[in-house]
Image: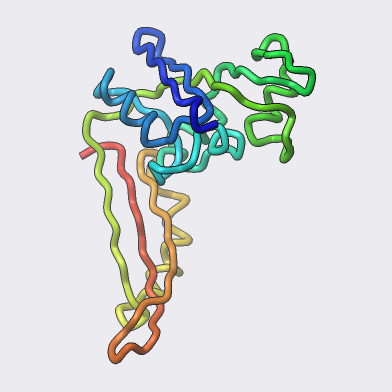
Length: 185
């Protein structure tokens, strides 16, 4: 899929055709070249091997609370089936179109490209990463985050991740990072 990396942005129709080998970072870059108010809800890692796998798996990312998963923002697709026939949304039917966007859990052919719906985003977004150790109350913050996170405005996304780090004297310590993304300044 590495050679299938073409991205064609159409700002007028707020859509794009993205070949399955393009990375999320390449997609973000191409959109930003064409528009300061459009984006696509995809993953947090710009080097994800390919949008084909990202979207086929659903496409979890920091704008999903407002815009849904990547798979929710797909308008069409090109797929090669087992017989070598290239299908689009109309010729594959809605059941297969649903399945290739994370619903089937298996391979139904080879995705060549996706037609994605671009979403309107603010020209500026805010991101942050706040890390707390156990000594700094990470468990209490994590406990409270569970109750607050679902009630945040849809333009706010905060995920919590835990990791082991080297504490004082090379003693292992647990830290929790709260990684946030706000659609605005």
